[in-house]
Image (cartoon, rainbow, N blue to C red; front, top):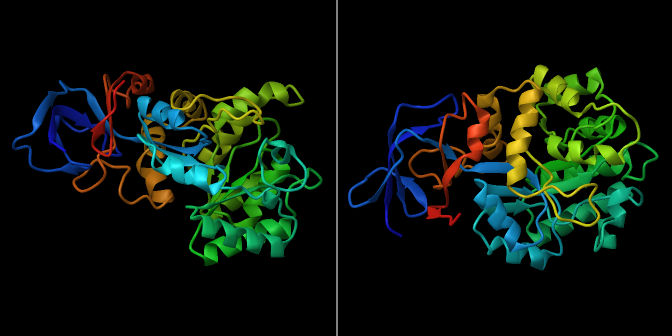
Length: 351
């Protein structure tokens, strides 16, 4: 693979934009030597690390292409099955992805009605949770996904969720717990799971649960785009999803960008792959996050939280997952939509 030198690019370094400089793409990684490289004049445009969407659902290679087209070079999938579909998508590209495989669900609730959901996904006891985790490890998952529901709403019982988190952690994997109501949030936070995904669209997360998340070092992936899209299907008139994210942010809980993008017939709403992450940025800004915090949540913070040590920053030796945009996204987040070019592991994506 030939080298490429991006001249006069302002680089997002996690704190702001640098002065214009040269960034070298050497094969699949960021290099140091521009000698012999094909040159691209950035003319002061902004170079960002490839974005990471920390909550997607993937079923087809075209969705990976859509992610890449919008600068999302890594998608963290939260339910993909069976295992042979995961294997096929891993090889498809252009965007990279990680997956939880089959999620752990309860015998009731909306997830059990998703077309194709295997019966083995249903977990009703701690013993079944242990077996579930071992089965996911055999499938080669990157983390474990579980669905928390408020008591009486058909999710796995509290002891099963706790066993899911504990067993995964003993085996070196973190757990992502779905929680879309205040009662579900309470259960999810109590397990100590590293990641809690979604926030309630209606109803507030209790102050005690917010404080507990901060104290335990847990991370939230609010998926405000999905909560907004799903609101018409919820009972009640209040809209609490932005306020819930604001409360988490104000307490210092780590927040990552995730959209719940999907094309699944059983989902509450269809959310487009790739484009939706830029709307997530806008909603997180409404929740009080600064542009730097949002850009970090989509790059270096997400990479570090999920143990993706080869990406999330622009420095020599890391994957050349890059997004070149016109404008200054630190001053104006909408500049992330003005994409000039995208590279996934050093390969420029046709747009």
